[in-house]
Amino acid sequence: MTKIYHRSYARRRQEYDRIRDTIEGELRLKEAGQLYLRRPSGMTQQQYHDYLLGAAFYAVAERTLRGLVGAATRHEPILELPPRLTPMQEAATFEGNSLQVLIEQALTEVLSVGRFAMVLDYPVETSSPTATPHIATFEAEHILDWREDLVDGKQRLTMIRLHEGNADLEDEGVEQHLLLTLEPAYTVRRLHVTTKRRGDGSSQVEQVEVHDPITPEVNGRPLFEIPVVIVSPFNLKADVEKPPFLDLVNVNLAHWRNSADYEHALYLTAQPTPWIAGSIPADKVPTTIGSGALWHLPEGATCGMLEFSGAGIAAQKAAMEDKVSQMAALGARMVYSGKGRNETSDTASLRVKDELSLLHSSVVMVEAALRKLLRIAAEWTQPGTADQVVLKLHRDFVSAQMDPATLTALIKAWQAGAISHDTLLMNMKKGDLMDVNRALDDEKELIETDDRDPILGVIQGGLA
Image 1 (tube, rainbow, N blue to C red):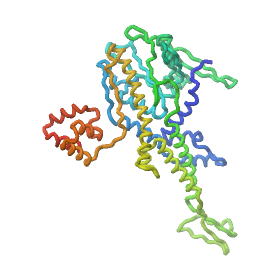
Image 2 (image 1 turned 45 degrees about the horizontal axis):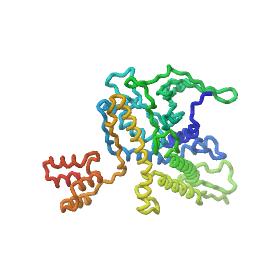
Image 3 (image 1 turned 120 degrees about the vertical axis):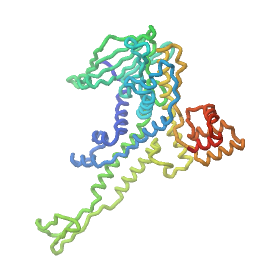
């Protein structure tokens, strides 16, 4: 039997699916049925269908992810490329996506499932002299197997197996895999893999090579490093780590189960139910209810309404509120517009810093991974230009625009000689009143060439 999955893949794969289904939202969860919402004992299939249909999903995981990625990409990155790599700014990936789109995709994957692979490819045989490399991307589920060994005294990735999406083949039960190895030179194999079930319940994996192994050469020489990076929130190693969103997703799903119980309880108890006591012939039992319905009851019969009383539903609601608070503490800070319940301002500030630490680390890792690939691409296309690659993602995640009163106070301090011009401009940049990518010297040149009075220009420009 051919080994195609790393020993840690199967366990993490279930977690990846859970995270993606939760981020996808209510429709996906309802389609999954009992995978995420158990069927209560004694409930018929139709009753379960109504129970499932009435459940309301609180899409905290999706909102959290969008908010974090939005915070990281609210400023354009600082990007400088050698002339030969300039086309990659607008078409960096195999699908033709820009570097900005690739950055957002990488951050989304790293923040949610905590794993993302990028492979640099340069089709030398078919490329023109002005062709540029491109980056192929692989989600966590498609990183099937890998191996690291000591090479020249350093721990290096010596094998990685990736699943290439091919809908036509998969419809026929065949997967297409990309096997990248060092033998000792970089070698590429493309395989068609079929899994067949045996009569005893076991499985047999068969794989066929699509073409002969390829040993890519760049500038006439083979490569002795696999041009791939595997990004996690904390490093660029192949080791699998716990997905960052797993705890948040688990609480989000628990909230979903509470919601199903709560909505079902409301459905059963919201409308009062009439009752009648007494000896009433079957043909005299009332069949209508409402202000326009008149009941004729025999002497001695009584009637009333059954209404819910008790703390059961209130307890369910309290459980849901507790889980909302847990989700806020786990990273869903956009659930609340400000502080949490019984939370001081200092505690809220510390909580936000803790939440942003994952974002900061993820940004650093994505930046390092892309910079590494772009520098390799620069060496491939024009040796000696790797140092010309500059990529820096902003760490200014929270928008805190300076208010007019603070700006006025800064202007007065500058006029009085209490602060320098550079300090004034630096504070304006921190207060989102200047382009964060513009150098202070460039801003001063713009002020000097402005026809308006310099001080007035600063004030009006800042208050605009």
